[in-house]
Length: 119
Image (tube, rainbow, N blue to C red; front, top):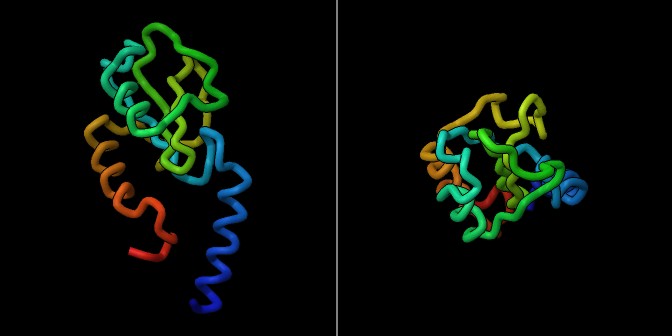
């Protein structure tokens, strides 16, 4: 491993460890919006739980009529939105669709467990 790669990995691991169990872990939180998410029994919530995602802080619960959810790929945490409150920063400061999220998840799922620079 080169010095640059080793230094990058060291900094990456330190940053990851500091936030690894929160909705804000790293830079991998997506905001997903879909009318189906107004129902806590929506298919996406079931899918998230089936894939090892758990409810994460600072999400406090579920609000009727809220159609967006924060999902973090680093920590595998999710949190339904709260009216008027941003729970964390999201990738590119914009919501995406469920289909777009599934595409992104599929890309990164194939790298799960591998070092960051290994394909």
